[in-house]
Image (cartoon, rainbow over all chains, first blue to last red):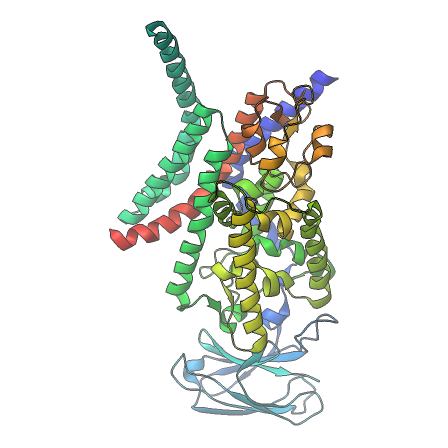
Length: 163
Length: 388
């Protein structure tokens, strides 16, 4: 019995070395492929969730995302809707847009902000509610993940907090 | 005297010959690993790869020649711990001009994934199939350190090393090991052994809080290594407090306490990932045991030298280390009776211990060269670039 245990032990030790030598060559590819096929996703608090619809404007687009609910009882980030303007370089100097955020055909808020050409310029956004869905924002910058305006690559991301 | 000299000389030649023979397979394999970097057109990259390869092989050769593990491994590990922040901060400054993570980077999924987050992601991932981290699942040109790559690396390390990740893989642990190595003697000797439970308490707390908040709580509030890597942009009172906590914990747990106690205090009494990794002790076939027949003097040298207090009287009596043992080899090297020994599970304790050490070192050093070696080479490349 002890002999067999020892043989198993040494076999496992040899296999460990084999895994250390060969593992890196094959394992990362296998795992990455498996991860790409899995349904795992980054938390919508960071990605903004899934796009719901796209509104075409003259030279640019507005992508309205699905509402992201409050994720957990103790989380600091409340419910929000993400709206993305792209490309940022094609936006007029002042943007003021009346938007239907939940797709019920009725406007929910007016979002307005200045869109300077300078990529490092501070951005501020204001959202005036037109329905009970949205919380107001006044000259908000990057206050929290549920209430912000930020330039990400060549897009402008606005997150409107929901009630 | 001449007779003695004649008998010593062949012995030492034999030892060097044996050590060289044992180093050759490792040298050839790691040379293969470093070949892409050695073929780089830029001189700093080529030089850094060459220096790192030579450094790793010199340490491995010394481990073979002296039959000691701890002090040579420690040189590698401390180099890794101190050079990792150099390369990391360098990249951050070059990329965004600051160590802080702006919201824009979080929204674009460009935050490199850190293994520390893994325990906190488990419950939210199981419940909602989402990862509570602002990175990307798959590698992208702007974020090669994606969640899939880092998770794959962690699984590989866990299979090969188990808890020895904390001695060969972790790119943070070398910092407190470095500071704990500075003084000759500990100034603070009496440490309540109950502190060993603290990492488990922190692990349970952060896993539950992450499930309740869907936020990587440890990274947000407690990680001492944020002080030398990256942290949320200080834009509010909350982020200012977080920044203060990171620096205070770093100074206390990674610099001051290791210096005073000669222990790896962050790893032993705080790090929740270390506790998490202890759960996977069983995945490694290698461990360290105490041969009770040889350990009769009760000198407790091993207990006094263990950097994480993984040995106590009960573990000596039982012949097994506590679950927090990270197989650094300090106890084996310090034991005068050869009672603390390397061991392969299933074999008899105290038999073929050098063979067990060799097999363990081949596995561990391949991983160390591949992962830690790449980090060291990357940081060295930046430093050499300043000169060349």
